[in-house]
Length: 357
Image (cartoon, rainbow, N blue to C red):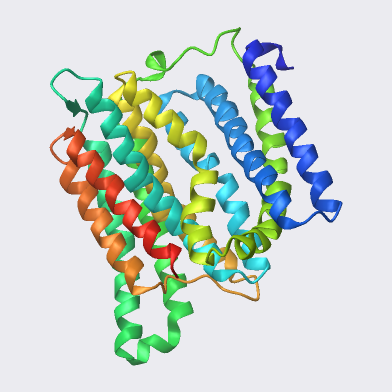
C-alpha cells in the first residue's frame, strides 16, 4: 500500500508509527507525565503530518479548491480531539485557549513568518499575492469576533442576557456555521487558479484513492488515541514546568497541532509560491474561527463541562487586533518584512502574557 509514496515518506511513516506505539507504551505503563509529554507531543505533530500527506494525496483526485478545504478541515483533526478530551477531563481553560491559540498562531505567528520568508525571497523585499483569500479570512474572523465581543460585553455589563451565555453561544455557533457554509459554497464555485502543479513534487507514482483514504483513517484513529494521551500528560507536565493552563493551550497545544501547516506555509513562501502559502494560512484561520470553534461549542453541550464564546477580555482585544491586522497588512496584496515581524511580535507578546497567568 505504501509503495505509492517515496522512500523518504515511507521512512517517516515508519518512524511516526514507532513513536506512536512508544507513546502508548509509556502512557499505559504509568510513566510520569513529564516523561510522556515530549513523546506524545512529537507523535501528535507526526500524525498531523500524516493527515496532511493523506489529504494532499486525496487532493490529486478532487482538484485544488476541494484540496484546500480538505487540508484545512482534516488538518485540524489533532486540535479537535485534543479539545474534546480536554473538555472530558474538565480542562475548559486548556480547551478554549487551544482553539484561540491555533487561531492566533496561524493568523499572527505563521502569517508573519510566511510574509518574512516570502519578502526575503524577493529582491525588492515585497511579497505579492491575490487579495481575495486574505480579505475573506479577515471578514470571517471579524464575524466570529463580533459574536464573542457582544457576548463578552453583555457579561461585563451584567444585563439580563448574561444569564444565558450558553444559549447565546449555541445560537452564535449556528450563525457562524451558516456563514461558513455560504462562504464555502462561494469558495468552491469560484474559478480559483490551479496551484497543485506548483507544489513540491512528492516523487513516486500517483497515490491511489483507496490508499489515501486508508492512510487518513489510520491517522485519524491514531490522532484520537494520542490526543487523549497528550491531554493526560499535559497537566502534570505543565505543573512540573510551572506553566499555566492558558500558556499550555495558547502556545504548546497550538504549535504542536499546527506544526506541519506552519512548516508548509513558510516553505511555500520561501520558494516564491506566495498564493499557495497565503492559502494555507487563510484556510486554517477561517476553519478555526467559523467552523472548528462553533462545532466544538455545539459538541461540548454533550459533556458536563461546556465550551462557550465567553472568553477573557484580553483575548477579545487580541481577536480584534488580529482581525484588523490581517486585513490591514494583506488587503493591498503586498506585504513587507517589517509587517511580518509586526505580526510575529503581536503573537510573542500574547504568549508572554499567558506565561505569567
